[in-house]
Structure formats: structure tokens, C-alpha cells
Length: 409
Image (cartoon, rainbow, N blue to C red):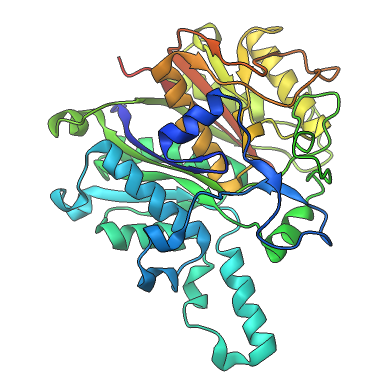
């Protein structure tokens, strides 16, 4: 398959806006999880979250677009601008049908929709903006990025919750290999920290009810009790290796070398893997990359924070790599789970890890739970020579995805 490479990264995260700002925070173990401030969360089951506090839409998004779009799309605008600048790429210099946009989405424009519903019931239908019909829609970010940058090749959106960032990146590789595009904006963002969004999220029963930012999200820990939500994510520039070389790309962060997705059986279905198909996705991604388990140098875990789901992921890793057979990390403990943006941010983090030869830490895990016997990198970064990273993600409802990222040379 034609090699797909990542040449640009743009990050908007609770612990840092801008790729290098975010990366410094991660290596320092600095968390962006804090008490919710975007609304009064006193009467809601979630009181801490990963908020992006360093982003002001008025500074980065034209006013004509701010009234048309949800915060989720506005975060993607800024991330895409940073990714394009990082890649040294001007979309106006590419044929419009050679460029594509493929993003992930989970909640869509939740906050925009909430405000329009409030206007409907408090003032009447005449006060509902026409943009309600598009701003909430799952494909709104893809469409807006396509319009803004003149990218008219194959565009789409993947809606597989937390797994979506891997699904979008993996499908981007296939799009580049098939010749459908030579330059793709991919990844994803999310922003649903509003009453409507938090109420919808809490229905899955997996959110932490802790009001302590340091104890709300402790994956694989004996004290795990769910996860905290967050907002933000990452947008990546992906190209065929030939196209990147031909235009003289300033840098290549890494190659997208393997991808696979599976779906769990219906609830109650049990087998040797406890009804999870996560291990199968990982095995297929390694096969797609042409790698053996021993060639994986680090795993970026899904790390749900739910004790049973953590146990199943730990079991999958044990069976694939052997007991404590590979270093495992979950930097998302510093951001919360970002749904449509979470796995995309993990891809960006893995690329930075390979670039700098260091495994970022997992924070707030004082002791591993029984059944989670992992070589979990905790509290401090771990220097390592990294060639290949495996990234895992699961979306609520049974989605599993696995992606392999490899060193550029």
C-alpha cells in the first residue's frame, strides 16, 4: 500500500493549545482536568472535566463563521490552521480535487443546538437561526473545513465515538493509497461541555461522579470509578509519501502503517476475550502493518476508567504481548476522554513520542487494580527508542479500533 505520512499537527487540548504547548504539558504531567466553569454544574452528575481554556474563538474564527458554527467546529478551524502551517502547506497551491477532509465526530454541535432549543421555547420559532439546520450536524466540521480551504476531493465523517479518531486516520490512509486524494485533513475534535451535552453523556453510566480533578479519572487503578469528559482534539495533515516528497515537505512526523476496526457482539455475549473484540482489532492492525507484537515499542491505551472495561483491555494486551510485555501509557488522564477528538489527540501524541524518543506518563494512578498487570508508564516520562506505536480506542456501543504509527525513516 502507498505509504501515508503525517506532515502537520494542530492540537487544541485542555492542557495546552498548540502542539508544542500541549506536548510540554504532557511531559510535565500537567493536567487540564479541573472543576467545570462553562456552566453551573452543581445540579449535574459531572462536576470536573477537561476544558480548553486557552482558546478564544474571536481571535481565531471570523465573525461570519462564528455565528454559523458550534464550538466543536471552531476548535477544529484553529487546529486545522495550525496543522497546515506546521506542514508548510498552502491549500491554494493544490488542485482542489486532490485535497480531502475526513474527520471524526461524536456529539456534533451540541452546545449550538442547546442554545437554539432554548430560543425556541423561550422566544418562539422566529428566533431560531437557520444555521441550526447545519451547525449541529455530525458532518458540519468536515463541510466547513472543506469550504474554508477549497478541499473538494472525497470528504466524510466517521461517527464511532471515542474510536472515531483512529477510524478517520485509518481510512485516510486507504484514501491516499487508492489515489482518491493526495492531501487530507484528518483527525477530530469535540466540545460538548454544556448541560445538554453532559446530560446525554451521563446516560452511558461510565462517567465519574468525583468532584476531585485528581481522582475523577484513574484508568487501570484500584480506585477507578469512571472517566471525566473533555473537549478538544487534534487535526492532522496526511499525505502520500510521494506527494510530500514532491512538494518538499518540511518534516514528516511518522507513517500510518496499520489499521483495523472490529465490533463487539451484543451485550451478554461471552467468549475467551470477555465479549471484547479489541484484541482482534489490534492483531489485524499489526498484520496490516506487517509487524509482530515484539516490534511494537509502546501502546497508547484506550484506558476507559471503568473497572470492567479496563480489565478487558488489560487482558487483551496480556494475551497479545505477554505479561507486562510492552510499555503502556494513557496521557488522556491529563485531558479527560475527548470522544470524537480523543483518539486523534492520541495519534498526535504518539507521533510526538516517536519524534522525541520518550513515552509520556499516565498520571493519577496510585496503584494498579487486580487483573490489570501492565507495564504502565506512570507519573514520569520514560526515554525509549521508539519505532512503532500501537494506539487503541473503543467507542461506546461496541466500536473498537487500532492504529499503528511508525517512525518516518
